[in-house]
Amino acid sequence: MHPTHVVRTFTRPHGLPPHRYVTSRRIDLARRLLLDGMRPPRWPARPASSTSRT
Image 1 (cartoon, one colour):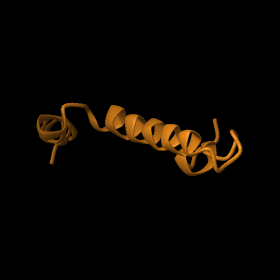
Image 2 (tube, rainbow, N blue to C red):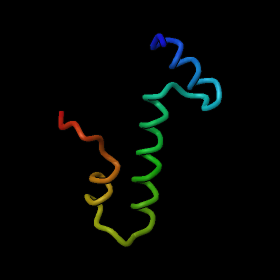
Image 3 (cartoon, one colour):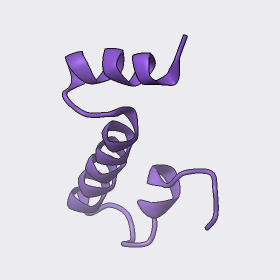
Image 4 (cartoon, rainbow, N blue to C red):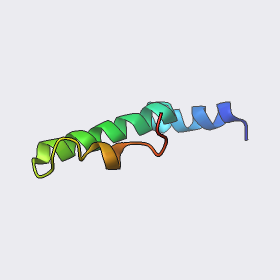
């Protein structure tokens, strides 16, 4: 499969390209963890961040 086809096929049902979808899910997770108030402010960055350190 061509990468363009995969992106278009993913974008139709989700309304966002894959990278933007994943980023928005991470932001939503971090927001929910912060609003929960049970964790220190730096904690949500760990489970919501990607594996690369740039």
